[in-house]
Image 1 (cartoon, one colour):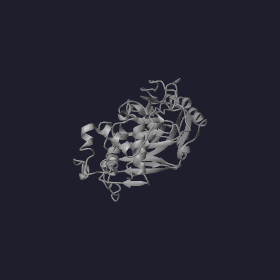
Image 2 (cartoon, helix red, strand yellow):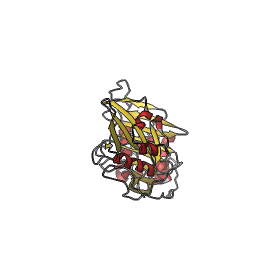
Image 3 (cartoon, one colour):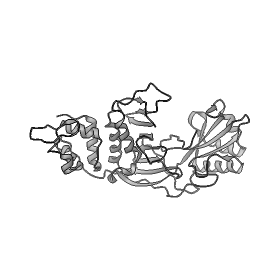
Image 4 (cartoon, helix red, strand yellow):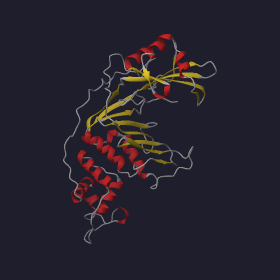
Length: 363
């Protein structure tokens, strides 16, 4: 009997963290690999004989798959395999009101940078009702999971997985069989965007609405595997307790922010020709702070350590720049008129542990 290598690796990861659920594709493939005899009774999914006369229902999924794992020779040594916990940020250390909402307060215990590689990036709103307009996270090789808060709470959240926990999540993505190459699917009400590390590069999968890309194919199974995967990724609180070093969601407090500028000349349209001119419209004190930073993404961003980002925000607020957004928004942007009917945007983007910039607001 043979079983797909991805399935084998996933069942090993499943055993390592002790979860009690497996994707349907894994269950089907493992069951199909077990030899059947005329003495086996009952019919399972797709008309296949059930193991031991309906093993799924008589002794439960967890017990049946443990037996299956032994049957196909999958051996696993249980253990925590955990990474040492990182120094946790103080739980309430973000500014949550006023003109500098979303930035760490002065003296906050900032989250450390890391050389650990990005393992998985996820964003989507497919198959995950009740979690808000969209869920998302970045998972790193050191176990850190940094996720977008999906309520009206401010900022990003940080948790930490064990080494087997990281592998469990990674293999859960791989076992869909859809990550051997970049793929783009269409025809769904919502979106799904997954970036999975593959050696030194990444495999990218997207699933998007028919508009504006009407010619993208639909998934061959109608999307059931991707919906199941999205439900799993959208709710880390449902992952096994043994997968975590620390499952408590704490504020992710970036050690750096990027100040990014845009000229919104009309709704949905930007003038991208002169970022230096946009920065030059700031008060001189703000320009002096920006001069201490380093170049960020695309020439439109300047990366600052968080203390300088806080100084810059207080300088802009003191100069009378208007903070964009509602009182309880989780993102920080200041605006001034551009003199031709549009607006100049000055946005503070959190920098993730690997140096990636992200933006939590619209536009």
